[in-house]
Each structure stands twice: as C-alpha cells, then as structure tokens.
Length: 508
Image 1: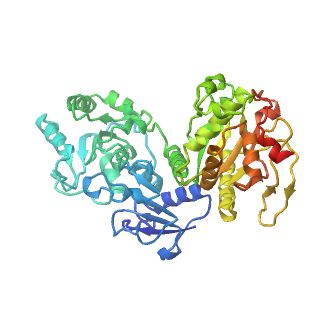
Image 2: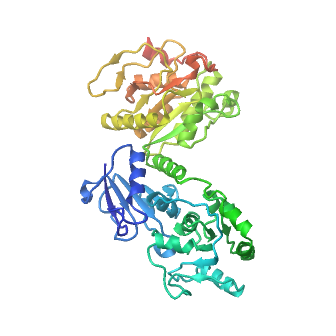
C-alpha cells in the first residue's frame, strides 16, 4: 500500500526529528499486514497521513483510508473536520475514530534511549527549560508559587532565563539530557491539561537519571509509576512542594525514589494496544458473540481469545424460557423448541442492531472455537470480505459446525470457497456458529424475516432464505472456527424442531 504524507514537521519523512515517520510505518504495516511505501503523488496513494502544519488534503479525493495525527495540546491546534478521517491518532479525543497516541510514546519509539539508575545525588537542585509563554497555562502560576516559597529554580530556556544562556540543542538532543542530569529535579510542566497530552517533558528527566516534577494529564499514572516522580495537583500544589523540599534535602529518599521502576506500561505494550485499537476502527467488519456469561461461564474460556482480540463482550437478548416474553415469540411456529427460538431471536436481534451499518458482520455463537491464531483468522476474514465484495456474496459460513452433505460447485473465481447449492440437512442442522454477513445481506435477510410469521430455528430459517434465492452464500475453506458442540466439548441445548408448513414447499 502507498501512503501520502502531508502537514508534518521538517525531518519527519527523513527520520531526522525526535518524532518521525518510523512509528507510523510500524503501525500501518501491522494494521494493514502489508508493506507500506511513501508516494509523493496523492493520486497513487491508498492512505493519507497528515498533521496540522499544512493545508489539509482530506478533501483532495476519496481516500481509501485517512489518518490524522495531532501531538498538540493547545486550543489553537484544535482539529477541524475530525469526523472526515478514518482514524485520529494523538491526544485530542474525537470520539469513535480516536486512538490515543501520546506524543511521548512516539518520541520514545523514534528516539530510543537508556534510562540510567544513578548512584550519586546531583549537587544542584531544580531546573526548568521552558521556551514559550502560552497565556493562561498553569505552569507559569506554579513557577510563581515556587518563587514565593523561595525555592530556587535554574531556568535554562528562553522563558525567564536565570543562567545567562539558553541550553543548546533540540528537545531530543543530548545537551538537554546532560544539563538535566546535574539536578535533583526537573520541572516537567505541560502547557495544557488534556487526557492524552503527555509529551517528552516527563521522559527526558527519566533519561537524564533525575526526578520529574510533572503537571499535565490526569492519565499520567496509567503510563508511568506514580512513585517515580512528583505530581503537581493544581488544586493542592502544596503537597508537591512539600515533596520537592524533602527531595532537596533528603539524599537517601532521593536515591530511593530515583531507583524506582519508571514505566507502568512499556512503549511496546502501548504500541500493540494502538495497533489493535486502530485495526478495530479500520476493520471492515464488526463482531458479535452470542453468549450468556452467567449461564455459559464454562464457554467463556474458549471464547477468551476472540473476546480479547476484538475487545468485545458477549451479549444476548433472551435466554431459554425467557424467549416466551419476547415480542417475536408469537411469530415462531408451534412446536419449535424454546431453546431454538431463543437462539434464533438472539441472531435476529443482533443482526438488527447492524441494519444501518456499512460494515460486514461476523456473528459467532457461544460454543465457537478458534482453530488458528486470531491474527491469522482476522487476516483470512478480511480476505474473505474482499472476495465477498468482488463477487457480491452476501453470506459466508466459516466453520464446520454443520456436518452435512452438500452439493458443491467448483468455481475458478474462488480459490478458497465453494459455492453451496443447498444448506439443508435432514436433522440437527447447525450451520450458524460462525458466519459473515454483508451489509446488503443483513438488509435482505431482515426484509425476508419480516415478511413471514411462522419462523423456526435459525439454521432452518437460513435454509429457506437461501433456497428462495434471496441471497448468495458460500462455505469458507479451510475452516477458521469449529463448533464445540460437534467436537464433544460442549453439549447443545438445541434439539430438532417441528418445521412449519413452508418447509415442505421447498424440500419435498
């Protein structure tokens, strides 16, 4: 795939800046599971990757995928048209398409460094390196408060410089770390307080082997060990000041604190979460798992790889006898097993929830068992969806829970699926433990389902649906899932149903 890059800072593409394209290449390669190449021609690009520092290209064409990165935490850089992007990465939450990527994570990944464990207490007290004066930022009030408390600060930036020169170098260069390493503490004060706005300001003191005094994101302790730095609470700054005074005078306490583990989450762990979250947004399909966690707690064990990979919880609408109270119950043919009715209602109600979506739906029953690594299953499902789009396939069944004799037609268009002439099996028909439905397939099935009032078990319902040529279905080979009921791992509560009269119209 090809990516067009727009609106980033100098050295970004050349990987000459402290935050550069390298982390985005890693993310994109993992999300799309393919090599990513930069192109200078937007017409050749599959992906738009852009930031604030140029006129936007989001409206240039219909991008296959568009990704915006914002590392800024000030109102003047507030993102406009955020809903137009497939994904927004960074610190400013834009809702359903947002994935948190704190700026420090990009910095730590692109500019790796060691994190020393000092054995000697620095002879200097506290320093700060602040270059900009942003109106209304609390960090200046905190500096004034320290001055009132007569706590000396060596200001080495452009703002209120007290050392007669400005420390040379960029935020990611060695002179900054060398300077900070001579102090017990470094003021790491963000210029804004946003949930995910965490910059290199806290990372550099760690790299310098000293202690940050941090003001900024309330989520900071989700990423860093709270015992390794000083947190400034705007509502109660005296607590931080008392801690700073102790660190200035208690050498043993300083050494204990500076040797405390730094990270609560490693950069690699956070990166994997970013990749997974972004994959879910970019994914062409949603996932639903029918399971009553209270009644089927044993099945949750085999479902865990699926639930964890997709970051979802199982759901259901009715369970067993509870189906008698559901509004759809009277539409089911007399004699249909109550457990079969409840399972069918769960399928239908979950499908209804996706009736206006433009995504494909992967629907799984509680006794489905993944037979491969979830990354492989995900990649195979995405390939299947592409084939479904190409050949206007509405349903693809992924497992072998339905052990039936089918009449299959080999078709050279499909190298991994076979067209199925019929889904019928004389008894115990089970073919619904894992399947994909296209958006149009969802709407076709609901139209069919709403047109009749003698429903039966969901697998038979699909038998009628496909036999009437409402939609096209396929089997997926090789199987991705297996049904635990048919392997003997779980017992099924579903028994053969008394079929409605319309069964005979199609299967005599």
